[in-house]
Amino acid sequence: MKLIQFQDAEGRKVGLIDGDKAYHVQGVTSVVELASKAIESNLTLTQMAQNQAGDAIDLDGLQNTKSLIAPVDHQDPAHCIVTGTGLTHLGSAEGRDAMHKAASAGEATDSMRMFLMGVEGGKPAAGEEGAQPEWFYKGDGSIIVGPGQPLPSPAFALDGSEEPEIAGIYLIGPDGTPHRLGFTLANEFSDHITERGNYLWLAHSKLRHASLGAELLLGDLPTDVRGTSKVIRNGETLWEKPFLTGETNMSHTIANLEAHHFKYKLFRRPGDLHIHFFGTATLSFADGVETKEGDVFEISAPPFAIPLRNALAIEAPESVTVKSL
Image (tube, rainbow, N blue to C red; front, side, top):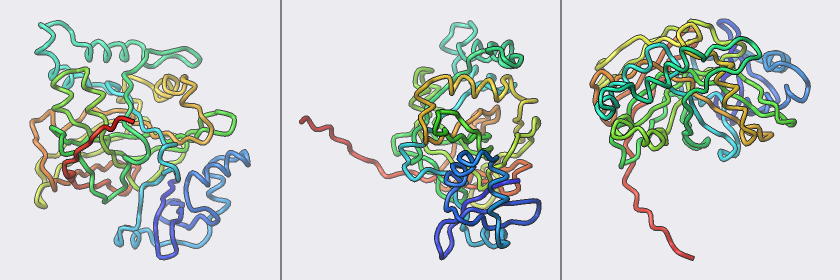
């Protein structure tokens, strides 16, 4: 089952997709509100959505009218924390290693060493602590865009390229317990030229917008997810490649990535929403693609039925003056 959020003439609403049918989830205007009720009632998110499912809705119509929005958000974007982990997928070190190898005098790069740590210790037995992954901060809820919306890149960016991924969505309960709401298709979107310039600029390269697919998949993520990533220019496919994710294709378990994120108390603040990207091994940038304004990124992968499409938009330059008080 999956949840969606959409906007119609009456306002924001939540929908439940069950097989090939979709229903209006009554009594709430957001997935976070529904999840909060589920926590309070000691129910799963699926149970709460089913309990409040009402009239059927036209999912095709919502897609045709571009009424679907990101499947999760927070009414206060400052209480939505967007983060991610990299070098988590088998093969994910190859492109990164190549970017940084010239500066390493032939020795193994930090990227390769980090990747190998994950291969050796990223899938610990239950109850054991596994290897720490690479971790990064992307921003707060203000950087998230939904399906069909432009994906902004700042004027100072040297590159704006897709990263086809799965994101985990979490809500922190009143007692500080992280609750996983589900998973979404996502485009993590980064500035790879800035990252390539110096590995310590990785933090800068990640401070960019990101997009989420329309559907929030409830329950567990399939262990083997196989999708397709495309860059479309002027209506024609410029680049296309399959991508693999899910734990079968990862060097870390999702539980290990979660453990190393939520071990920090500041990430267990009641009421906060977390969007956490799990990484990828497939980039058009690694194949020499130089993106341009107007290029459309398209990411699709079962069990998500609705492809994620966003066009690259370049923001106008801004002048910032720091004033002394």
